[in-house]
Each structure stands twice: as structure tokens, then as C-alpha cells.
Length: 152
Image (cartoon, rainbow, N blue to C red; front, side, top):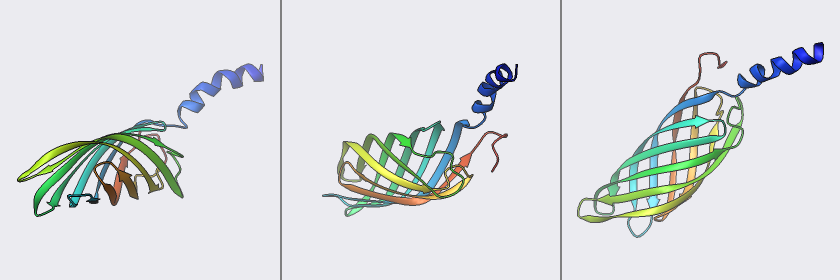
């Protein structure tokens, strides 16, 4: 009898251990070095479900001798996505467009790796390094919206 009660209770208990649908917003600085260097402010938004994250980032700033921007869409795999202390590592791939005033825009395939502080908390810093249209480095803060039942 106790075994049957444990089996029936397990699905509900495991459903609450990993929140689905975590919304994330980020802000920081982005640098991309290639034949056209970009020094920019970056804003991003993402949606995390389990260990998967879909993210969109837009950066605007100084591109070579003028003004320009970069838009990137990516999918990421997050290790330890709900850790409340320590670091959470992630990696991903995507596509980016970079262009600016008086310059032709270009599309790139991208790959990145990153680390974030306490991915199971409402706020934490992040640092990313990637390739695609040159070498890209990004750092900033990430804010997360968890379900109401998630302890913060």
C-alpha cells in the first residue's frame, strides 16, 4: 500500500522540482572582434524550459568607424539550470546578423559557451564567449521570472 502511494505521488512531486517556462531578460555589454569590430550595449530576452533555453539578443553601438548593430537568435543547453548557488554553465548555437551605417550587413552561424551565477535565482550575472562573424564576448546581468511556487 505504501509503495502504491509513493508511486502515485512521485509524478506530482517531480513536476514541481523543475519549473517549466522561466522567462529571462538580460542587459550588458557586447564586444565582437573581426574585420569590423563592434563595441555595443546588448539587451536580450529568453525562455527556459528544463535545460533548454531559446534566446534573442540585440546589440547596438560602435561598428568600425560608424554605428551598427547585431541581432542574434540562439538555442542553448544549460547545465544545472535550477542551481540556487554556484555557477551554471551553458553552450549553444544560433544565427546572427551584423551590419551598420554605410556597411553591408552579413549573416553568421554562431556557437557560444557561457557561465551564469545562480541560474535558479531571480537575478545573476553572466559571461559568454562565442564565435561567428569573429570572436564575441558578452557580460551583464540576467533577471528571471519563475513560477509563483518556486522558492527564491
